[in-house]
Image (tube, rainbow, N blue to C red; front, side, top):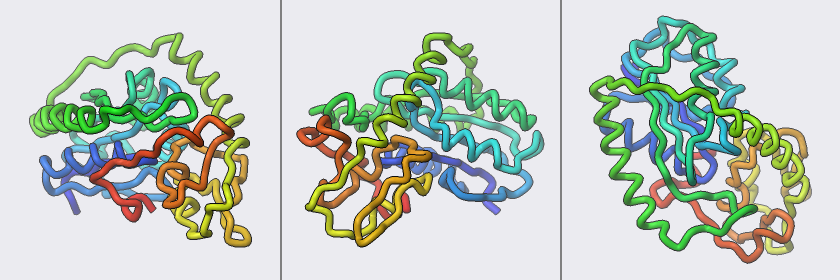
Length: 253
């Protein structure tokens, strides 16, 4: 049994890359994707959650996984979170704190890390991705050291504007998921269906079909498609694609 464990949620690899960097410095650390079912060992020295900020909050799929995760107050000595984001972490940490508290766990430490934004429905991929990732690596080195020492931080209270934006944003996600489309460039490789963390995509007649039920808007299908055959409406056709250079598609399937 590893003495440390990190749960992560990731679409284009930012949060997985962050989790890997922290795990490497901690040593003796298990990494677990926040999808499907998982039963942790009874006790860890450190337990972490690394996840992105979606619509100023935590991804609904990640929160649902955590709610179903069989944890108790004695599951870990020290609990931390790291939120990867394009701009700010919103209420992601406070939402995570609330679910953990219901399980008897105290979130002792939380930090945000700016990485490369991937939500090309609203904005293009920035030109300075290399600079952003180098800055993220520097910050993650500091964060990993603090986690190693079991540092503590003060958790910010939930902010009402973020709460409102989260509700609106998730409604927006449902609308945009219905605009996902596949061009004739698709080769039927099925990678998009394998990558979808919520099982929202199925292959039918060698083409991906979107279920319109529980899309997380992680953008994994769009960014990892080897043929750039997936778009959302007309917004994304002229915008670039991105996935973290230190993460492979196979690590997310």
